[in-house]
Image 1: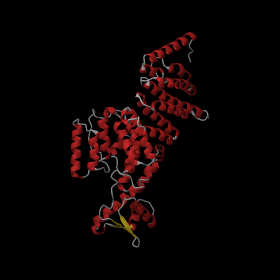
Image 2: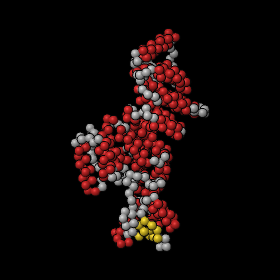
Image 3: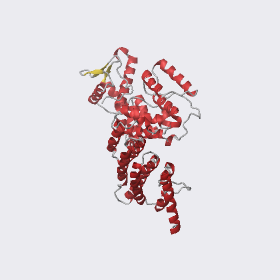
Length: 453
């Protein structure tokens, strides 16, 4: 490591302080942002990184950053305008990143990691400064997202509730006035929270919002891809409508969000088959699917869609490398309980890390429903007059063919649950061990609603 002479060190410190003073005096937010950035690599601009990064000691860096951050916050509070908001963003980001790095170093040395928790406490103070009237309040959502990342990292997601309550109930905030990037991140994390709480309609709404807005340069393309990836139309009229929409899309026409909402209501949502559209290079998303924000969102949106009876098309899974869901989807289509369990076992670690394993495990009820529906269709082809009478013994044999051993009592219990949760309409004839199915719509569709709990 090369050492500086006292004269050179004094010159650099003086230059930095002069630049800092000028940035504050002229309210130059862009320059101040660079000066406060520890991770700045700009060779033409002296930053705090030049004097701190030389130590390559995250714990020392976080201590120094804490000092200037706590000193900066009261000054920022006193400034009436929001000219230094970008500089505050940098501080919030750098504090979190440095705290994560410092905790890794502490853990590797056998010490208790505590810096990230401290960073969360500091960011709550920052949030308090921004959560007031005036132009600075638009920065509150950015800090909220940084707090979400800390809480998810620490496994203390319950702490998100107070921040969410402040954002969603405080009258001073208008969600639409926040920057789009912050709204997408916010909806992504709150959508994940709804997944953990098994509030699938809310999770579907929030994650779908994040997916449709995650790339502002290709918003229309993402909207088209996300809708067609999960939707097909009921009836011939609906299919003709779908073909027309594809032609309009390829001609360059773009549809407003209200149009898609009308589309959902009018034609309904079933298990999806992505239309075989071929996008032109100009319309394709240029970012790598394996590293795109869309991939992060789909890891949670797909289990949510599956839970409300909407299946993604294979092409969507291949495009984003989400092949772990392929057999799950096939199991739902076929009513193959064995395949579902194999898929969950094979990718158990990945699903557990994402926090969606339990969500996917509960898809077994939909698989049972599909199995019974297939048996019903076969019986209807053989003898339509008795198709609605399904012997439990037949279900046992079907499961045995799938190498799943169950006795009559277990099957009866499962069918009773299906009836209770409105996945099957019918009743038991206990003496004859027969399920008598309704002659009208014996297997109700979920229609984008979760299975009754």
